[in-house]
Length: 238
Image (tube, rainbow, N blue to C red):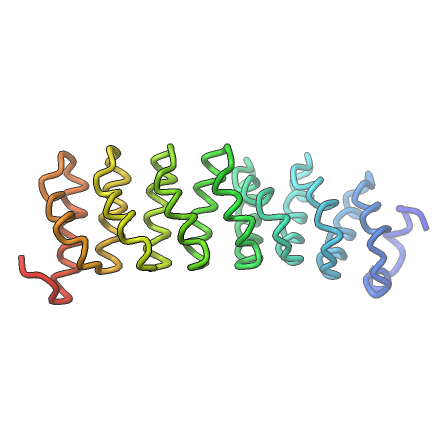
């Protein structure tokens, strides 16, 4: 059966037959309608063998193809798609970036290993997004890896790491967060302060108190709010 017959042949029959090879070949058709039908079919079948072939078209020149591929990868839910989907968040087309974000959320905890690997990517955007997604997953298994991200050479990765540790709320992160209060970067100090206030960690009170005299007013404000969080719980009296 040739590619051009896909438009006429009952697509439901192809899905029932799980003719992965034919559908993968159809991705190379010059007819976008055929390609879209093939992508939709692969998404419905959910065979992980289709992931790598689909990934080849995540940067296709046709907007609709990129959009549909990201959508299909979210349906198949395979961790091999995590890193390419993170990179697709930078797509110039908002619709593709949004669909990639939805796909990553659909993959969820199944992609944890890939997110952890992405923490060491050369691209700071990838590292930052990996930290953010791990925080959303609230995976305690990743705490030590996120703690390492507090030492990242990019301020935004460090700051997001502090936020992620607050989402996970694991006691192992307390000491690294307190240490981050002394970071040279304003953004990192502020995020670490906010996180320690959020998790209501009594051990951090003295260190946060020192930040009331920080050189940056945003850090001072974060310290006041954090101490208020602790005060509301009756932990300290200001």
